[in-house]
Image (cartoon, rainbow, N blue to C red):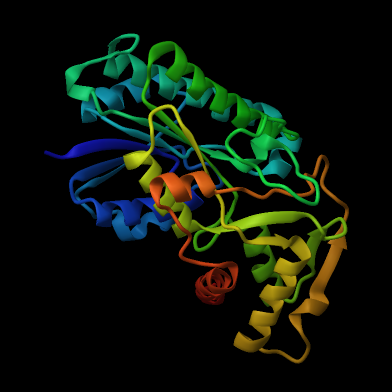
Length: 338
């Protein structure tokens, strides 16, 4: 008996790493991918699964209730993993409305359709769907910013600072409300900054690599001392898999890499690796250029992943030094092919 799972936004960075991993690991699953293919989504990212008989791609909007209802009916959906989101902070500063629409209204639409499809009444699942679960993928940015020390845990109060993180915080609260009010079986995972293959070109690490290779300035915001906790994307996918299958109903799990780096450290490390892999006359580090800081730029994020490590047995397989080499090698293949 195949299980039919709806995944949203899987032509994007994390989803397109998750789907091939998931299909290979679980022969009993059919994966239906609903993605609007906005600027961040690219079907090239899913080339390796496009002919897989257990994979189906549907182009559409998570805010389109009729479409979401049709997918639940047509494919008899008994699980949701919800990746789809507008996620670029700079874009949320320019155009917050799109973020509210996709991240809040879209999440609400999926929750509401799932509840109506799986539950006979609040807290009473239809027997056929008694194990159906809604897994919501969120971010550490909902917690705001940290000082020099300390970590975000699952009990850290929400304090979002950008329109992006505010919209994600809102969607997290809706998931919580559907669990508390209707008894929907939910999981939320909040992750730190992901990096790895297939990330959109505009993000920090691809931008550093791309500009370095093109002999262009490598732009670093402000003083370059903003700190992020970096998580290799496949480690994140493994954490999602564990939380979806083994997490406790209604719980939140933080997935972080324990790899804190300043943006300037990241840029210098990438330049150092490129100097050995694609050497040129002078070091790539000479291209590092400081640019005006972003509005509301959180100073430091770092996640305490103790809960998912201890309760579900998750651990990151890559540290930053190993993961960044794999990442650079993938981008060298992409940018050199152009």
